Each structure stands twice: as structure tokens, then as C-alpha cells.
Length: 114
Image (cartoon, rainbow, N blue to C red; front, side, top):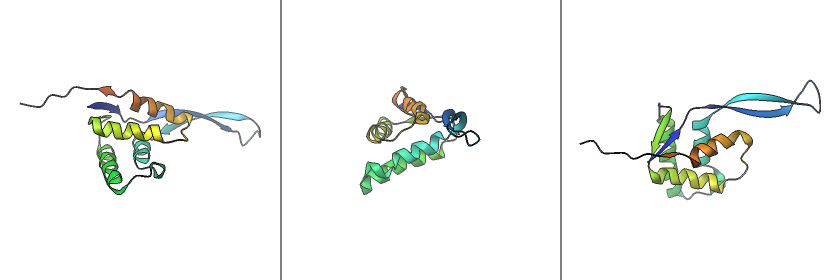
């Protein structure tokens, strides 16, 4: 199992200053982790087949319905997410922490209850 942090984080970026053309200002904004993961899992660029989209949607619904700050993903679920971020292009600096969270998701041993 993999433990994935689903808490939003503060992302930083620089944008053009509307008051001073040609100048940049730093901005901070909340990064929507769960929504971003769902978009990654079902991105059109992945060109998922019908069965693949159904499996990705099961993982997306699991993440969407999670009310805890972290989630445990089965290895297959985590692999699906990891493969998606390795196939997609166009990530920005704001996405880096999310990619690190996915790539470095802690491996957790789970024991069945007796």
C-alpha cells in the first residue's frame, strides 16, 4: 500500500503585474490536490480505453470520497497514478509538489485484522 497526502498546499507563481507592464509579481494560491489527481487520472492525453477509464475512475472516486488528509492506495492504484504523471506533459512549477508526493508516497505495510 502507498500512503498519499491529499491535503491542499500553497503554490507560488509569478505573473505579470497589471499595474506595471513588463514587471512580475509573486502570488500564492491554494493548490487543489484531490481535484488535480482526478484530472491527471482521467486526462484525455492518456488516451484511455473504456476499461482503463473505468479503472481510473474507481481510483478517482476513492480519492474524491476520502475525508482524511491521507489515503492508502493499493499498489495497482498507485501505479496507475504514477504511470499517468509519467505519460502526461505540460506540468507547471505549481505541480511539482504534487508530483513529488506521488513519486515519494510512503510504502506502508498493512496487516489484516484478526
